[in-house]
Amino acid sequence: MQKKTVLITGISRGIGKELALAFSNAGWNVFGCYKTNKPDFEISGLKFVQCDISKHEEAETFVETAQKTFGKIDCLINNASIGKNKIIFKETPDNWADVIQTNLNATFYVIKKAFDVMMKQKGGSIINVSSISAYKSYAGAASYSASKAAVIALTKTAAREGGRFGIAVNAVLPGFHLTSLGASAGEKYIEERKLESVLNTTTDMKEFIEFVLMLAGFKTVSGQIFNIDSRII
Image (cartoon, rainbow, N blue to C red):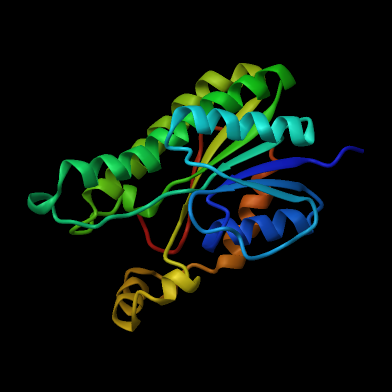
């Protein structure tokens, strides 16, 4: 049986890196992309390219290269995103545009090209990594929250449009998790996030990754938004 192939954007670290490791361990081919930080790990079946998927042409090339490399695309995970926190009256047009371009527009570009491939295959799974910030308000997070809320709306529309071709599109909301980046937020911030949780804990990265791996194989679930956290929205 031919190995399944997953595309993962923003593969260098954090969620992207953990997803790559998990899918490889599960026997998948992994094709990833990064913008600036080259992945510092090697795993079976992994190939990656450097590109800026916020540019439409580079997003298309990323998907096309994956298909040429592995022959098909079974799952796409839109993970790449940035945050540039500024309160609204100090926000700049350039800062706002950078976040929207990376978090929303790039996600759209990659989905659009993946649809071309998956429609011909008559199936596939797309998982968009949104954020609980799409529902919860935090001072300084206007651009990030707006972009992640828009990703949820895009997910639902893409699910409706892709369904007749057998393409499932879902979104996951990771809570605050203690990757190397999360841990750098500081003890005060971490404790504040725990207090928001009904279980007084942060998201378990292993549970989150296991859920995404399981969701990638679902055939009858689409258009859903999964909050993998114990903060109530």
